[in-house]
Image (cartoon, rainbow, N blue to C red; front, side, top):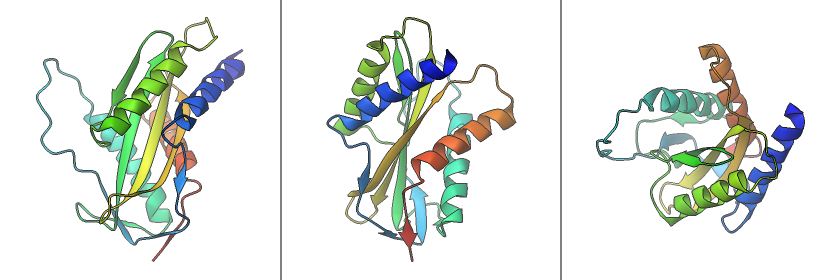
Length: 183
């Protein structure tokens, strides 16, 4: 039953990412030796306290590990490419996004809206909670999206820190599997 549920969620997410905003953008092999993460600038103080920093640390560590294995070196700012990522978490009724390192433009809002529609219009009546990680590789000079892909996973309930990091690393590896670099 869990595999059937996960398959339904994955198919719904594929449909989400495939409509309108491309799920996979690729200009072939990307010429780069360094990368930096999108700099969100000063974030407004939320009316409520929510600790997202541990999520960003885990995602950024996983991305840095994957890209280092492909020959890219992380730099604080000014990399050849910029890495932006969007995290969308949804269930049968609600969808939320963490877009601190993705940006706040229409593209982000369109992706979140499509994810919400896929999560809430799913034929699955049993409760589920899933997360989607979308990663963009952007040319730092032109701001053109060179690669875009995503991975979806069930949200783990009370995992150990090691299990959470392994789940995130698997999602990052899947999302970046087709991205190739040359120096």
